[in-house]
Image (cartoon, rainbow, N blue to C red):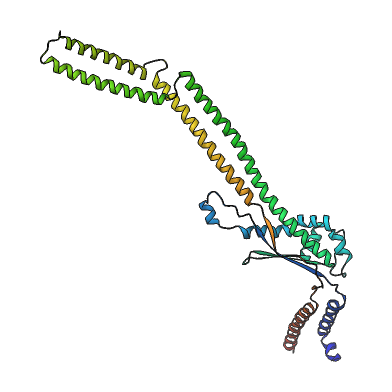
Length: 360
C-alpha cells in the first residue's frame, strides 16, 4: 500500500484531504442551531365596489408580493436592521470555528452581506404560495430572535411599501376634490346669480312656454281668419260681426308680434339670448357636478384599495427555539467531499495512465 502511494502521490493527497475534511466535520466544526418558520402573506378581504376587466386579466399578485418580501428579507437593509437590533457581527465573529465564523468583525458591508446570505435562507414555494425562512446561529435563543425579527420587519416593510403609494394617491385625489368642490360651488353661484338677475328660475322653460303661447295664438288666429272668410260670403264688411272679427284678428296679430319680440328681438337682453347663456351656465354646473361625483367615487375606491394593501404575515409554522443542532450535516458533508475527491483522483489517475501508455 505504501509503495502504491509513493508511486501515485495524488492518491495520497486524496486520502489525506478526505481524512482532514472528515476530521474537520467530525471533530472541529461547531454546531449551528437552525430556527425555521413558514409564513404566507394575507390581505384584508374587502369587497371592491367594482371589478375592472384589467384586474381579471392580471389576476392575483400574491406570488409577486412574496418575491418582494423574500428579496427584502435577504437585502442589505434587512442586514443593517438585524445588526442594529441583534449585533450580528459580535455573535458570528465570537462563536463558531475558524472556518465557519465571521473572521473579521469589522468586515465591510459587502463581505458581511455575503456571510449573512450563508446563514439566512429564504425559499419560496410557488405551488403552495408560502415562504420558508431558516436562520442558522450558534445559540438557539439567538436563532429564534433572529427569525422573529425577520417576520416583524418583513410585515412592517410590506405595509409601508403599499401604504406609501396608496397615501400619495389618496392625498392627490383629496386635493383634486377640494379644487373640484370649489369649481362646483362657483358654477352653482353663477347659476343662481344669473337667475336672480333676470328674475327667471329657468329661462329655458320660459322660452318653451312662450313658444307654446305663440303656437296657441297662431292657432286662434287661423281659426278667426277662417271665420272671417266664412262671414264674408254672406255679410258685408261693415257688419258688426265682421268688425268684431277683424278687431280680434288685429289683436291676435299684435299679441303674436309682441311674444315673438320677447323671444328674439334684434338687440338687448332678449329671452333667447338669456336662455342660451342660462344653458351654458347650467351645462357648466352639471359638468362640474359629474366631475365631482367621479372624483368622489375614485377617492372612495382608492381608500378601499389602500385598506387592501395592508399585509399580514400569517404564520403557518411559528419559529421555535431549537433543542439541538442540525447544522452542519457532518456525515453528509464528509461523504460528499470523499465521493468528489475520489472521483476527481480517479479521473486524474486515468489521464496519467493514458499519457504513460502513449509514451511507451
